[in-house]
Amino acid sequence: MGSHPLRAKALRRWATSDPVIHALAKRTPAPARGQVDGSPFEALVQSIAHQQVSLAAGQTIFGRVRALGSTPKALLKAGPAALRAAGLSRPKVAYVLDLARKAVAGEVDFARIASMEDVEVIAQLTAVKGIGVWTAKMFLLFHLGRPDVLPFEDLGLQVAVAQSYGVTRKRAAKKIIALGELWSPYSSYASLVLWNARRVEMGAKPR
Image: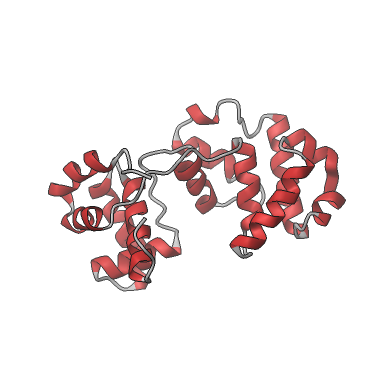
């Protein structure tokens, strides 16, 4: 897949700011990621579909939902019964329809979301039922490709930081917040490096 476009700049920054992440980025660098398929609306519907289910189940359910339509108006037209038949739980049906209604009303402005500041994107998305700060940050990082997202709420990142920085799991979130000052403006890539390092630690092949 090639090296991540932020790697060279991040390594120069971290060489003096954080030797731990610098060493990890050299040893188990995170790969470049391709453009996420689909519209911003579809990306969020996919995130909702994947909540609290296996990857395979989430992919199957999202495929069925996507077949009903890929736009807010199409899913509103499909209605709750069709979304339930596609495999969404009742709460997830409410979340998807709330997102669709807010998109149609312009409360979530997908036409300009790519040009919004990170905090504005998070504010708009977390006003939708079923979308929390973690989901909004994952959207920023993976769909919009923002370079300086710090998802300290992520459990996997907390475990990786606890292991790499020698802190307790309980203190990991606060540690990540403190490390954000050392990683910035490449916190997104730092997260990718740590997630990848954890995968390798668990026995997966480096990507």
